[in-house]
Image (cartoon, rainbow, N blue to C red; front, top):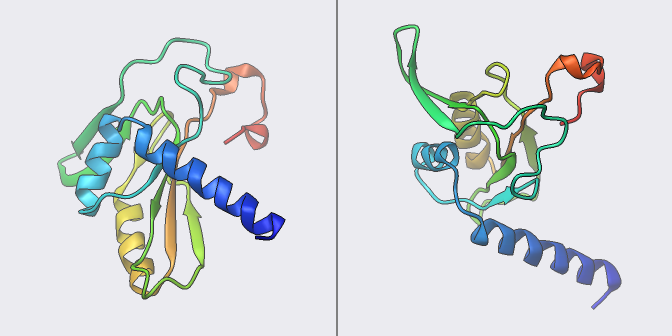
Length: 149
């Protein structure tokens, strides 16, 4: 086995182990239910280790109605950044992928466009990765273009 193949295998095992071992947040559970299937979820930060966050964060919540609009899926108070990997079937998988980083307001994540895009892309053999992120507030004296994702 080549060194690159071995490293790739190690990364895949680590990702799968992390995806299986991690407990789903409320938002991740609602997202996977809306997608209609289970997908690997990779946590990006260790538990309780949110960089540059000046206050303790509350629990993640989900909003499904906003401004009279039904069927919305908005994850509120993102406190556990992760990547959710929505892959097409093995027979269709082209090996191509796109990472989506949707907005929704500070600490929130709008999921409906991701679900629609994943269905469309998966049908064409393309993996969609949802980056569930949290950006520190601007009062940390960072310019907006220096915000780490």
